[in-house]
Length: 216
Image 1 (cartoon, rainbow, N blue to C red):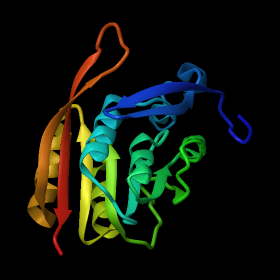
Image 2 (tube, helix red, strand yellow; image 1 turned 45 degrees about the vertical axis):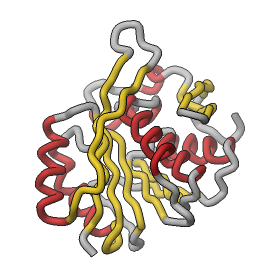
Image 3 (cartoon, rainbow, N blue to C red; image 1 turned 180 degrees about the vertical axis):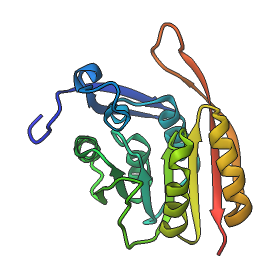
């Protein structure tokens, strides 16, 4: 596709009452230049179960009506895209330009016009805006990023803003969210969403959804 720096293929995502065609990297292994360099493992290049679960929760439960949404670690942008389809003004953020190219391409494929992107590393996250929502799918997997994400959540969420996090049951994520919640907000909803993917070995997942509100 013109304008993309990565070879792509199209996959279909099914949500209740909604079918989406998304561009993802054609071959993730081709993007691995140094397996020992954690920063360059292309986790952004495919759609993980946690993103599917978060997208379904958003699709079934939330209408944004012009609210602003920051998606952290957007990858190819599935949850943020669904936010856009539900009326949000979306900012996709990732630390890889190729990821943001795919996010914007996927938004364009589905007619989401209220979308922009932010190229930023969590360890040096420069932004001077606050958002009504901050969302992320499986972004709290590594405790070394937790101090940076605490800072981002607290700076980027407006008072009374809402935080949406999904993950496949990681202890590090539970621990982080318990501490963040005690200091900063309250629970709106916590629930499990089943996700099935086309994988002959591990097709079924239970995705945890944490929907919190920042103190006003």
